[in-house]
Length: 165
Length: 198
Image (cartoon, rainbow over all chains, first blue to last red; front, side, top):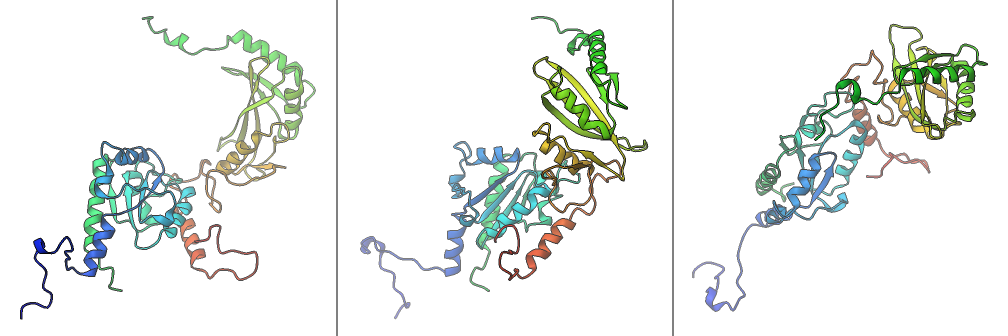
């Protein structure tokens, strides 16, 4: 009898092979390898973020090079820099306009904790207004560090269960 | 390579006698204004004007022979124990004569109102807004006196001496935005739930 589905021998398939997987894994695989970042460059961290996309560090290796400047097309928000209270409402609006599912990287100490700006004008950590997935310390962090954060986000996406609602 | 100049020569200063001459010239210019006084500052003459005669004095400076047609700077100083408490400072520049003058006027905490100079120098608009935002000094007859650096609805004036460095209840404003976001959108025509549609 054998199994229900009999895979043809590769050499006989004529290039028409198939594979089996779970839908959940397939969705996660697609999501994690085509993250579209929303670059919210607020200060000097944005320069490192640009370096990250450039040829030397080449974020395209991890499938996240398609930065879009409209939140409607993005699913990964990179808050790079100092978030002031004046900007906070706009940042939150951008986040709300992104379609689900979405993830947030707090890049640099300013967006993670307010950094050296402990004063009335600066939000003391963007987690007071946004749900943050990963914090990248550094002032500014090296592009490698942000790429590492991206890989950790990808690992996180792998474990998600998109169909369980 | 030329050696570095000694510290006394590094800053280009106007010689003191030149400042004295400029101050004399100013004194004769504002002689008709009651309560005006001229002081010889370290870098430029300083004109003190009472608040009631401020516009009159500035008008003379702008349209008079010295032609201070450029309002380069406008800010305030909080001299807290002193009374009246605030000092509004104007930095005026005469392009024709390459000359500066600093004008100062005082206002108290409970009547912190100074006449606006936007009628004389339209460029003073945002400078006065910043001054209002940071010190809470209101400018009478200003066309658009809103906050400029801090968000709308912010409480307190950050550069006042009694203001805490970390702000008063930093998250309050955000909680208010959140509350407004949770509210059902207004049904009346012409009203929207917020500034941006989400």
